Image 1 (spheres, rainbow, N blue to C red):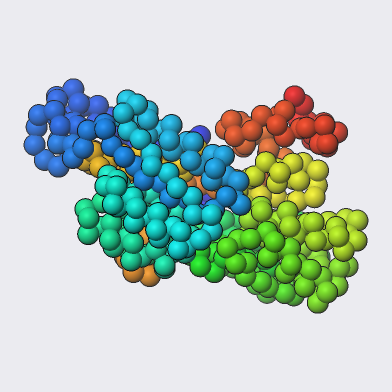
Image 2 (image 1 turned 135 degrees about the vertical axis):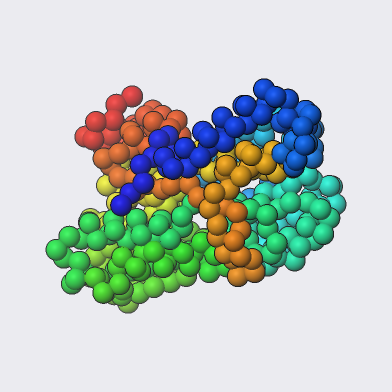
Length: 379
């Protein structure tokens, strides 16, 4: 049963958030929020508005990180701190060693809180411990880092895989049982990869034949493209009924490999992240679907959790951290998990356009204008 969503927020969570906001308003009226009188943890802020939020993102191949996550977090931190807070930003460009160095530098610069989207969830653990020893809270963003993290902001990643798997079954219909599917999984160093794969296999296992399966080091499109060429040789171009691709960057490489091999009709290919080029491929019919994960909700929640954590705004913080997750090193980590949706031709207008991620003009460039018109998208 699906959970109703209002502007990307499940109704149960919305109710909790509204209740918490009402409580916060009542307390503010009595002068007991953000360090103004009263007693108790929520009554005295640990920090004022002049704070530094460290932000560590993993790579630049995934378009959303630079185009959406970073600017949204920067804007929200500024808004929550009346323009006084700042974001200390670094991108690891897919290097665990670089990210480790960047996190240690943020500790040395005495950041007040650190948001980290780990390149390698296990490798970052010693640096998370160093931050904690220095009294700096660490919030895992998008990927569940190991070590003593304070909170986690992401999506229900197993559900992402389920959505992708169901999309493949829907596309194949009655042909599913006799179909050969290639699986292009993400980076095994990313803990999300296992969740995506588990969700997808939960839908696909015993319903299709998994002909070939690959892990993709560092989510590299080049690696995915090379593996797709291997799959084509092993399975045969005409025998590939669908391709499970864990994200959009790899989906583009998979489609390019299929074209290079002579495919005139592209079999259903999944994706994730709703990159602009992926949305355009969905419009044109080259990519069957992508999983749209609201960047606005995830990045906004992360910024809020970071600021609330260091300012001691416990009511607002607890209202966000309603979920619990386990990592290999930590149990019951407070978390907020943002809903996801399958983006297809039928709901582009109701998702990325309605949320202001892209305009019709950005999607429907001259190359895609006729395809856009065919599905009712007009600038």
